[in-house]
Image (cartoon, rainbow, N blue to C red; front, side, top):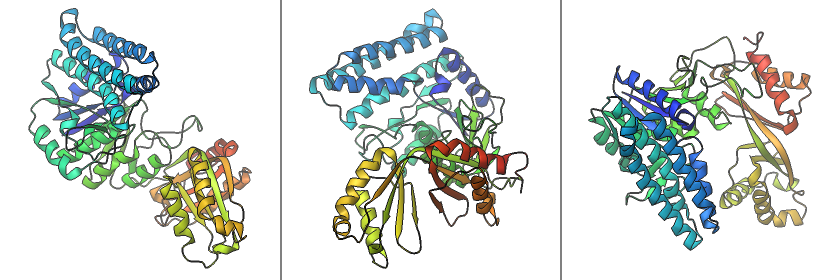
Length: 464
């Protein structure tokens, strides 16, 4: 049993969709296959823009609908003989008309709730799967469209529903386990217990594939995208970055969390729990072996596996003698940020307790600063804390690898190399797992820092 997920770039147009059908049919000859599809490339963004236009009262949403219809009609005409097109166009037209009614309602109310946005966004995956299911059928395959809203149950947190695995897995096993044909399942979407459409968050189609794979006890989950696999660093930053043949689940989680965009961080949770290997493959280069994510990576000559980074970061420094030996200060800080919905990416505190450094996305910086000024107002007024310092335009860089565990000297080599390259490090953090060392640098030194570490550890002379 194999689950094959194809992202938007893999189903961008008729030629790409036809190539995906070939890959699915080839896999189906070797065993059972379930297909999970994203919307056509760019369609989800188009749907969001259409909903926002309708909410503002702009008639632009109708031109977005025209584009939606044209994109799907173009795909149908490129994939099907004229005699077969009508049977595919009819359900697409019905869905487009339903979407128009939804957006017209948004226009009248001048309001697009998260619940309505989820419904609007769901049409992209539903329409791409309708086309793909029909294509497989014309090619002689027994294919069936299975709506993910019948399989995956979430709560009512519209925009990023929390999956009820206990309710979802039996549905998946019952509906898909005995299906003799090739089920085609729309990614990204789910439903509440009452059947109201929800979504799993942007890039949630990977997550759908993992949930479906876990529910079926699949042997493998394949994520097909437009790169050859997980790379040792971002190719725009390091032109010599290479594909990592195999990584552990833990390494992959670290890499994805810290900016590696090949796979969504949530994707691995169901797969890790069921110990199902994930393979990253390239639809544009299907002969490439890709990257295998699973139990126990291969120990290589390199002491690190890869380097990931997150741009657009801000750093907030809280400093003052009033924190030394005072219980509860850290709890107040974190509670204030939690109430404001600020996600802390990285924390650093010296043993002197004189300074706490917090790192978060730049878009949350002002909210974080305001929340802490309110929470710590008394300490700031009485001088027990110095004025809070906010530093913008930073980058978090993470050096990740299973081989780092128990290997002396890794941190020394990292910071010696950075020092030789005259890169200034603002904050450092390392977890007890020893598979991740993270640090913050100014945005202008991002490229130099990543290239320096890549050359030092993954370049020709970078072996242990």
